[in-house]
Every structure is written in structure tokens, then in C-alpha cells.
Amino acid sequence: MDRLIDTDVAIIGGGIIGASAALFLRRRSRAVTLLDMGACGARASGVNYGGVRRQGRPLSQMPLTARAHELWQQLPALIGTDGEYVRSGHLKLARSAEDMQALEQYRDATRGHRMHLQLLGPAELRRRFGWLTDTLAGASLCPDDGHANPRLVSPAFALAAAAAGARILEDTRVRHAAHDGARFEITCENGLRVRAAVLLNCAGAWAGEIAAGFGEVVPESMIHPLMMVTEPLPHFMSVSLGIQGGGIYARQVERGNCVIGGGRGALQPDGYARPSRSALPALLARAAELLPPLRGAQVIRFWTGVEGSMPDHNPVLGPSARVPGLFHAFGLSGAGFQVGPAIGEVLSELVVDGASAIPIDAFRIERYAASAHDAACRTESSREQTLEST
Image (tube, rainbow, N blue to C red; front, side, top):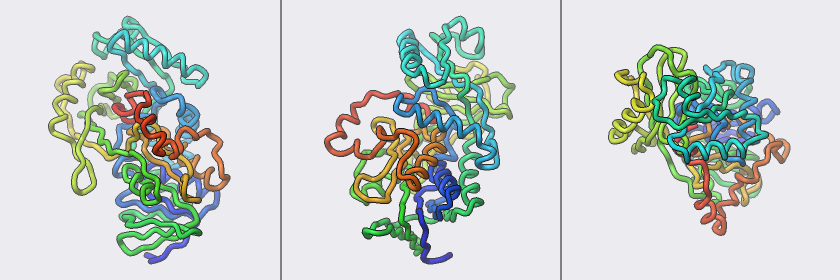
């Protein structure tokens, strides 16, 4: 390995955001070096639930998620695989009349964003989705949302970026990043140094530390969504589903396995997260209550990941307020898989064009300046952004 690399753009973080940014930058002829502390997509992007949904996102994210929706349809051309992406529909369930009112308000607020949300009453829900518990008050269906396999999609973005000419360096932990007034210099624990005119901070749950190193302190926290997968079962679940207010989410893949999430894992000293034994019984009980066909099914694996979360459940996305050439993209709060490719494209536009075609002012890091921090913490947002990963 070269001990010194000179490049146009350095990217810290090889998840779906960093890798897609590398791919889009190579398509615009920029020299790119991407650094990841482990394997690309190993801590969040490749181990999440796999939901590809627009339903439930805040209004400020509508343009971003709409562009992502277009890019997901182009996945084979972008990265050489469909990643098991299917537009199955996303069903958000209501447990009460209050939940149904919230779903109705959300439908009305998002009219014009081409989600075509359909509200279903209890009778219609039972008729169309008889495999659900009969205690629900209704649901909202987004027919074109869906799901994909993150273990295929996220690494494929890194592979596609490498095939396009990006230098992808895995198992390369960054020790220090600084700006000398003209260029960035990144020093890695293995002795490698990278110099670049532009730095993209896409380090996920560790991105707040990088931002703080440049004088931009943000209240990023780590979350560890808990998930499980069953043995292959006869097909019964035709949509990806979640619950208004959060709690559990589920989908069934073509092989028959059911992927189910809810609750939290725990961070380990090695920097990876593991399932929390104390959370497993509650997740199993909620799954069996919501989905009677799962009763008696064998669970073959539990897992979790490490994701960055922000108080207002919106990402930090855009240029640094302090350092020219530094751009941030992190804090997706467990919901970044769907919007990841669009964020990568936005970053490439910011680097090459100096502006993005998609409005991103709501996501700028300045909102966490001292005067704005308290207000951000009080922001009312979709609680599902925390409890329904992706």
C-alpha cells in the first residue's frame, strides 16, 4: 500500500452513503479514496432491516426520498444487481383510533408527493391482509414502497465504486483528520496518510466525532436496532409493514424467511453491537401477537448494528459551517437505507457543482449551533424514525 495518497476527494465511511458518493463522484471524473474502519457496510448499511420506504418520513425529507425512489428503480444499472429489491408495498398499521387519525393527517400532509397513500379500515384490512391480528384499527398502504437485501446492496455500491476507479480501502481506521488551510490530511492507524482537497464525513455513528474534531459539535447518539430472521415459511406476508408510533416491523423474502425488527441491541467493546438477551422475549412476543402465522416458527438468527441518531431524526447533510471543502452526511437515525443513494448523489453535486438539485437546508449542521440545539431536541417528529429502522 502507498504510504501517501493524493486524491481529489477523501471519504471516511464505506456504508451506502459513502460508497454511493464515491460511485457518483467517479462518474463525474473525480479521483476518490474511501476509507472504512472495517468492511464496507458492516456496521449499519449492510446489517439493517432492509426497508425501502418513503411512508413515515418527515415532510422535509420528501424531495430526498423521492429521488432515492427513482434511483432504487435503476439499481441494476447503478451497481450490477437488483439487490432483491421489490416494490411490495409498505403497510403502516394503526392500533387505535388516534393512530388512524395520525395516519390520515400524514396522508393529507404528504399529498402531491406521489406516494398515493391508501387508508384501510378494519374490515378492508382483514379482507386484504387476513394474516394479521384482528385487533387492529386500520392501516395506511403505500403501494410502491418495498424492501431489499442490505447484505447485497450496500457492499455492491462499494464494489461498483471500485470498478469505476475509486480507491476503496477497508480495515483502514482513521486516527486523525485535519485541514491546513489548503488541503485535508487524514492519518490512519496503519500509517497511511491521505491528502485531499475535499473531505466527505460519512462515518455513520462515528461521524459526530469527526465533526467535533473540526469544531462542529453535534448531539449524535448511537442506536442498535434489534432484528431477527425465521426459518423459511410458506408465503403469507405480501407487504413490508410497520406500526404507527413504532414497536415492530416485518417483511418476508422470496425464500420464505421472515425478517422482523424491534427493540435494541447493545454496543460491545470491539465497536460492534450484539443482540441484547433482555430484549429478545419482548420482540418474540410482539411478533407472535401481530402475525399469528409466526407462532411456533423457529428463529434462526438475531443480530443488530451500529447507527447514528439525531434528536430531530433528520440527517446532518451539507457543507461544514467552519471548514471549506468539508461535507457532512450522517445521523440517519436508523432510516438511511432508502435515502442513502440519493444522499450520495447530493454529495457529488455539492462537490462538483457547489449546490444540490434537492433542497437540503433543513439538514445543515448549523441547526445544532448552541442557539438552535434546544429547539431541535424539542422537535416533534415521526417516532417511527427511531423505532422502525429503514
